[in-house]
Image (tube, rainbow, N blue to C red; front, top):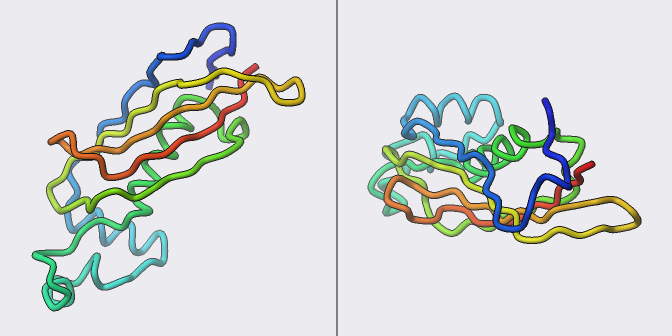
Length: 139
């Protein structure tokens, strides 16, 4: 992967968006198996309904992983210095996540050139499901 160069990026630049397929039960079952997170609210319809939810919904960490995938598709994992995410909404079945990032700051710490990237994961209706920021070192 060819990481972007610090001198080539500017505040306001957007990372290439990561559009994902709609969340379905298979996605949730596969994520539960891969992550070890078998919380029934995400995979058991009866349990979800007993919890006063209309259906199961995506694991928050699944969408967080999508944001990580957005970042590591843009710069190598070794360049990631910080990642913070806040969950702001439920990703329901049928939601189509799209992850976006925008450079909001350029700075140096101890001679290392870094950028701060504002992040968000939205559904097809533009509703935020996760927001956050990352700090990435660039050469």
